[in-house]
Length: 238
Image (cartoon, rainbow, N blue to C red):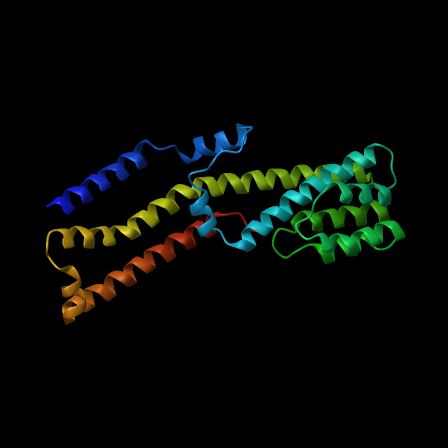
């Protein structure tokens, strides 16, 4: 009886916390407007659920935006394209410092900067560098204003990144709900065990129980897979 009361109290506390806790929009707004680094209650979950390639892709996108802004500022100051790119690369920290060496060499020696940018751009998160390479090629061959083109690339990349973050914030709620619903069968087993119903003996000790266990696990896995698939399709490409 005591274990049942403790389980009910903990379930009630979790429900109250989920109901009264901060929303996704409020948490994201506080993170954007706060000047101090505070602990984010979603950080452990984000570190567990978000893959390393996704974090590297975001880092490359942010670095590309900063590189475009720095390059545009150097070009507006009257520097040549090679000098401007050299100083912009020195001011921006790329996720892979080794990738900047061929670009620096091409900018200093008058080489093919567009090809160096394309080779340095990763498959995921390198959209900004590929756009910058296209702008560089147009500016060199057609003589167009490179500063205006680079600034336009920076604005487009920043808008795309903001849209991607908004979509991810909107999908955080459904993903959390799906994960919580997937964990409810475990809570049901704990409650049944607290009532001395011996659910594990039924599930693992009889043929109908094994069938119920396999069906439940399969349906639970299919639900998680379908939720993640819908969330992935809702996110913008790239």
